[in-house]
Length: 204
Length: 204
Image (cartoon, rainbow over all chains, first blue to last red; front, side):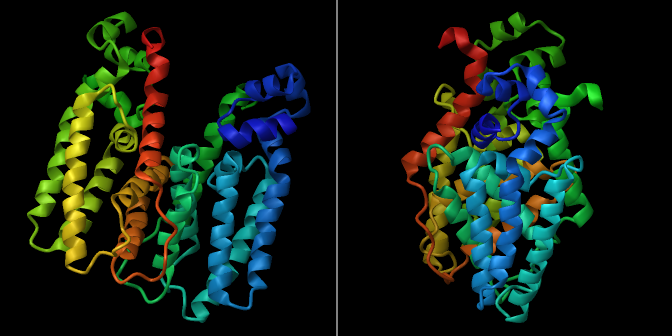
């Protein structure tokens, strides 16, 4: 588990089961005996962070200022992305084979919908903001992080600040429609499959 | 060349020389005889697009409306990213070993500085916008594109619209400092090295 945390944290979920086994100093067969599918290892390693991610919405909802709660939540999640490349991957990938991960994701989603509702009711969040805009921001942030993590590790903060200022009401103009929920989920599912399917060829 | 266009265009510059040779139906030795380093192949394949990229600033500067020229340029460049994954990589990577690519990039940079100056002079662009913010947007857009290109191919348009609306004056609040030029260049250089160094191990 510690080895997987190290490897996924620095290389992302694309890191192979073989590289985890190497870091742990065990054979690949031993690793697969404990975690028959890569999803199982990912779920075990990131369960605590997914739980924290789901709980972060509850903390943000406790903030008496709706806009501050909303923006603080976005900054918090993007900071979690910046702190761990494997977790950054999880946030923009879906793992239907890891129900624990998906259950926490669903909890975070429900909480985020409430944060959106409160911030719109207070008049501070643009009416055309949707939960899918956070997914787009997380994908965008992942792009900045993967390019700058070593050479300019704070660059992501500026991207997030630009986006949050744009989310603020009133609208400065119309926006193209966001992707449909189903299309965005499909993108996340494919990305998740991309990092797990090569590892478990025999079982699929 | 056509094979490389196809392979890089769909898989990005991470695609190996071996996969280009396979697509072309030639041996890897033949490919390396024509293009001794991967940078040489990348430079040959993308010369026309880099030229168009450099020229796009001249076209945008011909727009009598400074803000329209500035935002049209950003949308145009992001659309070029969306159209070709290899080109998307080039925009956020530096290739010191491919002077033609870097010369076009320098031209585009000079033109973009003029676009920024015009849009600030007209009072429509925030004073704290810097050329590095376009690099951040290109990195962010690459993240959205790599996640959504197949399942939600227009998702990037919404990210770009959020960002452009945020760039518009007046400022809605302070921003964290952008990364230093040198740090951002270092990030781009490392990324470029990442996609070329594995291919030319003998020569480095």
